[in-house]
Amino acid sequence: MTAEVAVLGVGMHPWGKWGRSFVEYGVVAARAALDDAGLAWRDVGSVVGADTVRGGYPGYVSGATFAQALGWQGTRVTSVYAACASGAQAINAARAQILAGLADVVLVVGADAAPKGFFRPAGGDRPDDPDWLRFRVLGATNPTYFGLYARRRIAVHGDTLEDFARVKVKNAAMGALNPNARYRARVTAEEVAASAVVADPLRLLDICATSDGGAAVVLSSMEFARRHGAADPVRIRAVATVTPRYPNTMLDLPDIATDSAVATEPHGEPFRASIAAAAYEEAGVGPEDLSLAEVYDLSTALELQWYEDLGLCGEGEGAKLLREGVTAPGGRIPVNASGGLASFGEAVPAQAIAQVCEVTWQLRGQAGERQVSGARVGITANQGLFGHGSAVVAVR
Amino acid sequence: MSRTRTPVVAGWFTGDGNAFRLLGTRCSACSSVFFPRADTYCRNPGCDGGELEEVPLSRRGRVWSYTDSRYRPPSPYVTDPELPWEPYALIAVELESERMVVLGQAVPGITVADLAVGMEVEVVPGVLHEDAETTWTTWHWRPTEVRG
Image (cartoon, rainbow over all chains, first blue to last red; front, side):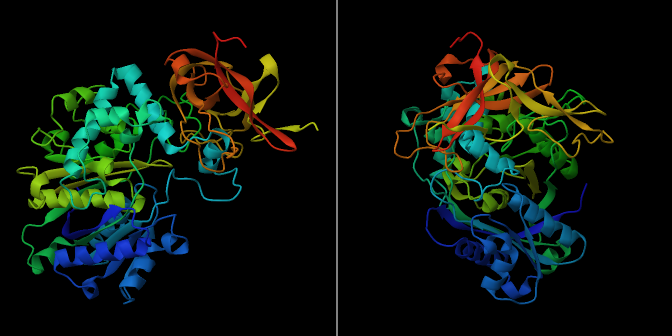
């Protein structure tokens, strides 16, 4: 088991389409997290930024961008990019610095300003970039991959469109209670069914939007937390950021083909499950210990996949778990009490940090109407392009 | 004016008609197959590395999954904004002997209503788009029951 770090503060800039710079969202989130921690910017020894590829050069050096916006003060600075897992890798970099004794207090910030419509690759003619190739050769947007996964679940596990809609209904009901969510309206199954098909079998309301937003956490050593008067803080006990294992037999974004399993038998534990397993092992907990989970519902069908990958149920049983209400508020293991990506839309580098914000509020008992009663252990799970994924376990 | 036929990516497929095949590479040491082709190193972590030799992939496979694009994809996908958008199906195909899944567009006219997981499909030459000088060629998947 790895030593723990304390979550002293969390903060967010509400998700939406605000039309401003990602730096603004990040600064609002950072100040909120510092306030929440009862600390000033000058108390921070290190800042870690989760980068965005949509903000030009400042986005590639987001740690410095946020540090400059808050006012240069000679802190240690780190910027990380890991697609959808950028936020979790930023948290992990901060944790490593604290556990190595390089810093007592680290501010982690991620923010994005998303374009209208589909995410698209960086510009120019780049035939050596798989992300460029999948658009050039196939026109394969992110939702088409979600459509492939959803159709596969229907064929293999017998999931139905009604099951997928039920995920949206559940998450929208929670998002309606979350002041940081972009979509605050409840949604009915009929509304999901009436929305336009984007990538068969998925409809507009099955697929998460892309959003502006910012999230930040202030982490510290346990020793600093005690000195600071935080006797019983939320603690991060694990951050898993493992890669897939060859041969990766799941068709992942942005790939046009899987690895071939002709020379090497695939590992029994597929990529997403291996992320969860690494987090459980590091934290010394298992799925039976969880009070809640925040998972990456890029689509409704993917949320069901995560139930299985987190070990909340057996393979193919995700829809059953949902139908039985196990993952709903009041169920044994509420999933996406925040409202999930269904209610937020994805603000890539902020999203994995936002998941940790929600788990922190839940573990503190500060989640208001969304509160999961008696929450003690929470997990976040996330996956993105180019073999990135993450899971964070927090306890109190 | 006649257009030049140019593959959308060089070296990914070859041949005409029934001789059309996707091209991958195979490591001479561990026999791992790569598509899109790997030409510089073998990615199997258990392999010390061998020569990567060009190899045609199986013509036929089975549908692993499928979907479609109901909205116009962004650039660098090339479309004519003057024309109404025509959705096309995408098929992920499991190749048995290579033990891998390869994505591709379905032949024009095939929609998701024509497809099922497990259905046999074969690779055929296709056209991605045309401009003034060039016909950009690609591969398509076609259900084997369909004859056109």
